[in-house]
Image (tube, rainbow, N blue to C red; front, side, top):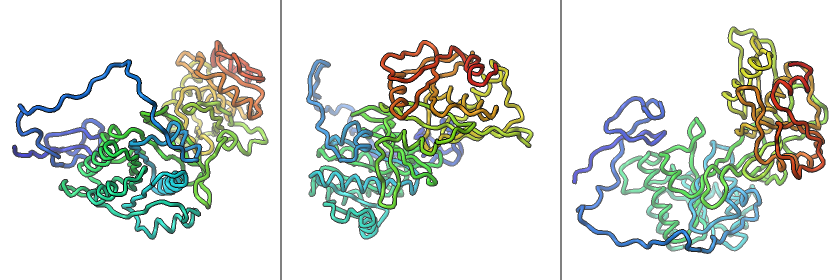
Length: 451
């Protein structure tokens, strides 16, 4: 059968029969490239395969045996440790510390007795050894290699049989059976498939490092994220010392779990109590600051939300948001004006989550509104108060989940007051005074004497 050319969007993986300048699926321009099919399929439709083994839902299997790295934050994100024969994809911005984290992880796993191999396609072996010496890991029993030919890498892995293999990075690998440049859609998909298949077939855990696009998504076809068992994103700003390792997919544990690290001169140090770190330097109350008690995965995390409201000299006031959804800010501003009669017309609004953490849950709405009102009215919220709750379009405050865990974390860190929506579950909240608010109007009137 003659192979026919196909075209695929490098951003979203949408297939096309012919080239086009714009991808209709994701809206990207000049992202559609030609690729050659990997195979032509069975030669005969009448060819029979083997019968697969079937079971039922009542079949019991032993849980996977996990290997602990000794790095608590990494084990938390992995769901309790490394699962044998698992495939893990780690993505992050250039220079954020992916290679440093994985080199430290390989050394830590190696010290526990696992045979670990680190294959670098971006650096020479001497460069990796220099980084290891800077991190104080030169004595770790890690097998090191520098290669991009996937055939040679798989042959070496098959001969050495390590328990963990780290491939840095998947975009530099190339398979000689695919006529495409390294980093292309065909190469990334084919090399990822071969590595994941090898991991399942030989019982070797494989960690793949992936580059990200300017939008923060892992570069290459989306099918790669479906192939692997776990997808981790390494987040953070270069200007901040904090780094967040976030699980967005995990077949062996909870997703949206986070691990917090601090970048130091000796590498990445885990942060056991991120709430205390994100809330540092809060001795004096200041207008525009509110403490939000959030949930990241299974752990409660307290963060400071900062707002600045100033008169605008522009025809269209600026709305600058860091660490939160800009659409959510627009919604909260509209509710404050429509339901509470507090306009922000002609005012620039700047909103920031301290420490470089990104907050996505709607429970932050009340803390955002409190920070905005505090900045606008120049009235400081009490420094020993936390806020959380979802704001509906009608102005009502909706209860959120895990209220008890949020309040316990706040009490443990010395907070004595909390403002939450009415009808929140408060059993076992600890010794913290809780003020319940039915709607945003009551909150504004109680906290700022308006409404």
